[in-house]
Image (cartoon, rainbow, N blue to C red):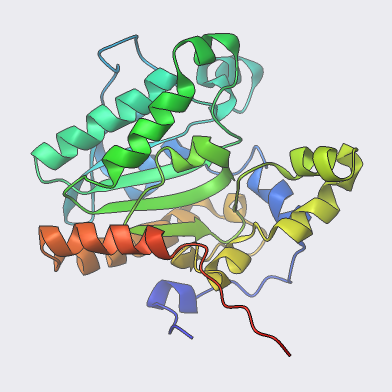
Length: 283
């Protein structure tokens, strides 16, 4: 068993929650979003726009920033808290141009030797007709391949919802972390329930079966670290939550700063090659 890092050892002492309760916390509209974390944990953020093909995607902000003593590129999903903002941000569901913009910014980070921080919070990539016409599947798949080859450290943090390929499209990283009350899954609990139980009312059962919480995914080796949240959730103390995220990101950036380019790429490759391995035994 791995030894918890310093930021994990400070995990909150909140009562154990069910998987469904954590899903509901992850979706809480009072919860800090990407730009809230940028405001509290980063500084000197300069947002950049556009994918140089179609246009800009306001659900996937990104740009240059500083965190601690690191200059970095930060990208991520941004949701809204009211109807007007949700329409602007498309409920955190990015279009193809969002993923292409993200990759453009990552390549800029690589060019200037700046590490990349990805803050994931999406129910999934936008599935509308326009998104399909502009080839959302290709945009995500292309990111998966190209992120494996980026020659600077990549840190990904699931801060709320980590839904399907929409999350994975910016989630290929040397270190994948999750906030304590986030979830990361190939499908929503409601979607899983609709398929397996033929009714969305079974979403709580689906959430338990899917092993989608930070604690479960840490045990399965899918994520590397769980970032503790204040008691009651990140929205109960946004400053403390942002401080925990900052400490976790800085810890990982300092660790990967010691690696050569070859070691960095090999570590990322081996991490994802090992995902899903398990051992079967007979009794």
